[in-house]
Length: 104
Image 1 (cartoon, rainbow, N blue to C red):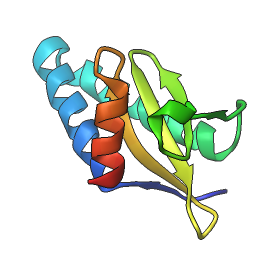
Image 2 (tube, helix red, strand yellow):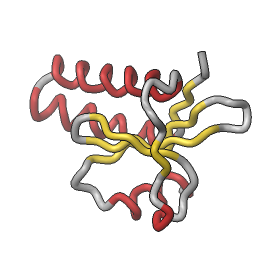
Image 3 (cartoon, rainbow, N blue to C red):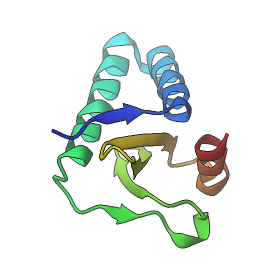
């Protein structure tokens, strides 16, 4: 199995998602949603669905998919693993936040 590494920007976003979901819908829902995101990360690594490149206008190499209300952005790492760059809510400005998390 290919290793999945959650990068710093993605880790920060996952914390935000957990806290928001817990505060809005409760602990059980927060745990379910985060578990689902990590299952999606595994599906990415296993290539259980076609990888869709990030649109060129974003200026970042990598791939994107959707999980419920969020977009997951990732890239291939030099060691062959998968780096989860960020996880952004569909209402966020995708280009700005992706660049912030990918470069910063």
